[in-house]
Length: 276
Image (cartoon, rainbow, N blue to C red):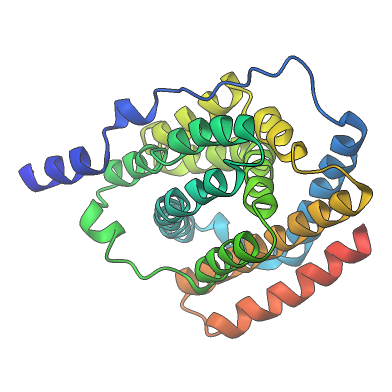
């Protein structure tokens, strides 16, 4: 018991994770027409993914499969947030000389986000999954690909892809998480989603979608920038689709692994380009 307390305290407390210093302070939305275009793209991408994964997602009707999927995907969420805690500060380094306001606001947002892994870890702890299991679980190949893409674009292009990932992740959470958590609670109980619910509430109260959007638009100045921003969104979604498929493969014990991830990536990018 003492070991668990030490681990939680070292990585940050639940209460500290729920404190916020990154509220949206913008008085209006930047580029609202382009926002409508990007929001519509997200819906199209999500609908395509739901169709492609419909057969395997039907397996979630089995309570045991649902529980294992929730645990494995939540473990990966914790690990991904911890990895992003290393990537996000690099945006500030890139923006420091060019856009001090972006540097400041992204820094505050990223600092808060970096502790949100504790919210998701709280749900795992409730289900009896300790930090020892969370951090001993090998990361998925799709997670490695995501990190590689973000590091590569930071070095070769600048911070647009990383900042775009903020808008993408916040938007996808709003589109998918409420219904997903309802499904989880029906099987595992409300205590199993306390951290995830707190995370959604915090994002809504602080208007993180609009915050991430407005920060993204500080990097979008030209039609070519708009095209590249949408391309980042498409690729980020392809990586998410690959992640979902990989988690299902791990949970169901089915073969595929990296090859299945690659197939998801190719299909998702092609579908995204057709949609745009």
